Image 1 (cartoon, rainbow, N blue to C red):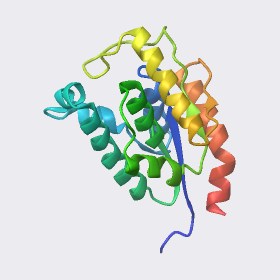
Image 2: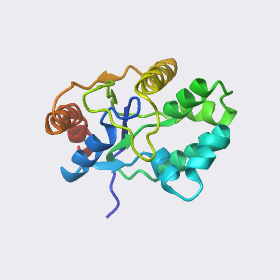
Image 3: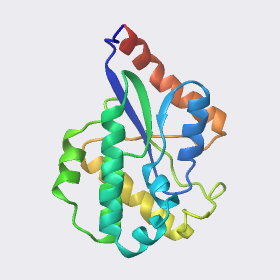
Image 4: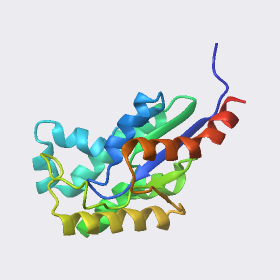
Amino acid sequence: MVSTAPRVRSAITGGPGAGKSTLIAALERDGVAAVPEVARIILQQPGGMALRANDPAGFALAMFEAERAAFEAARPGITVFDRGFPDIAGFLDLEGLAIPAEVERACAGLRYEGPVFHAPMWEDIYAQDEERIQTWPEALESDAAVLSAWRRYGYDPIELPRVSVQARARFVRNWLGPIAGAAQG
């Protein structure tokens, strides 16, 4: 039987280390369909960190291709993305690079139908790791750039509270609940 439920794509944006991936994992454990951050996947591949360091425009295009594939593959119902197309535009803005036409078109035309959430920077949970190499000040700049990009493309991200992962997941599920009911009906 083919589902007639619409696809509803939601996203969580914010700077590095703001708890997005941890929240996505908690939502998945609760049965919410989710897409991991494509940038982190690319960075974990051989040559990914070098691509980011030596060719940020190429890194952005790699993120774009992966994000577009995930966006198009979303099944009926709600899917929550760890970042989205405007995050790529924000990355390019931060790097002082032009936004390629295909990224611009995706940001303007491939819309996230569900709510977009913003994980605000939170120094108490921020930690660098193998892929998250930004200092705290750099992470703050990244957050400002991606939030600005989402707003530029017509979104009004809902700020996540600075609470436990479980409470954040409940907050997101509460927002998604009415949408889930409508998508099933």
